[in-house]
Length: 341
Image 1 (cartoon, one colour):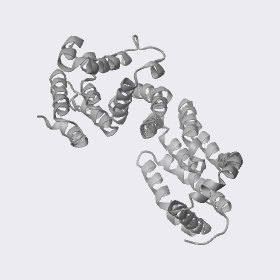
Image 2 (cartoon, one colour):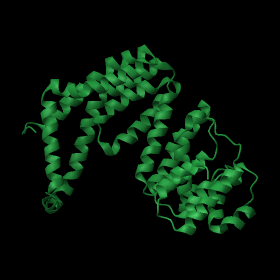
Image 3 (cartoon, one colour):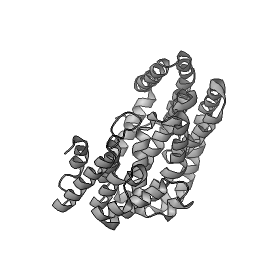
Image 4 (cartoon, one colour):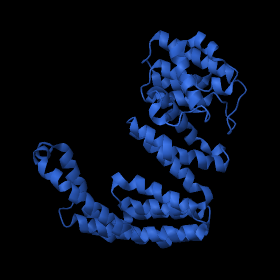
C-alpha cells in the first residue's frame, strides 16, 4: 500500500469497521490506478489531492462512503473511468456522490442555485475540495487564482457558513483574501489595513476586510492603493468607536433581560475574563508596556515588506504606528482605571 494513504489512516484511526476500512482502501487503490501518471501543477502525484480532500472530511467526522467519494471524486471528470464501473465496484451511494461532484465541476451542467439545491453531502465534498485547492493555489496562473479566490469569497465560503462549518468558512476566507491581497502588489497595503482593523468589533471585521480588499484590488497602481490604505487607517479609530457604540446601545435591552443569566455565569469563566481585562488595562495604561508588546509585530511587518520592496516597508513605518497608538489610547479610554493584574 502506497504511503500517500497514511495521513488518512492516521485520522480515521479505529473509527471505521473492518469492512468500512477495506472499502476505503479499495477506493484509494482504484483512484491511484486511474490517476496513475497524472501530476498536479506543483509536480506532486495527483493522488495526493483526493487523499487530502478525504483527510479534511475525516476531520469533520464524515462516514466511510464520503471518504470513498472523496478519494474517487475526480475519476469521472479527469479519467476514462465510467459511472458503470464505479457503481459495480462501490455501489450507487458512493457513485451518486462522485456524480454530484462531476456536475458541480461542469459549468454547463451545474444548476444556478447549486449552493442551496445540492445534496448536503455533495456540498461537503465541494467544500473540502475547494479548501485543499485554495491551500495549494499558487500553482495556478495568476488570472485563474484571482477568479477562484473571488469565487471562494462570494459563493463557496457562504455555503460553509450555511452548513454551520464556521472553521472551514474562516479558513476559506482567510486563504482567499490572502491570495487576492498578494496579487497585483496589494499585499502590503492590505496587511496594513488588516492590522488597523483589529480595532473593529470581531463580528463585523471579516465583512469589512472583504469589502476593502475588493476595492483595493480594482485601484490602479501602488500609489492609489497606498492612499486608499492610508485614508482607511487614519479613519479606523473613529469607525471602531462608532461601531462599538452602536453595538453597546443595541445590547442594552439584552443586557437588562439577561441579568439573571449573567449572575448564574459568574463562575470560573467570568473570573478569567476579569483577570484578562485587568491585565490588558495594566498593559495599555503605559505606552512603554503597550509598545513592548506591539513592537515585535510591527518589526515583523516591516521586515516582511522590506524583503520584497523597501518602499512598502516605509509605507508601513509611516502608517501603522499611528493606528496602533490610536488603538492603545481608545482601549485605554474604554477600560478606564482599575486594578492591575
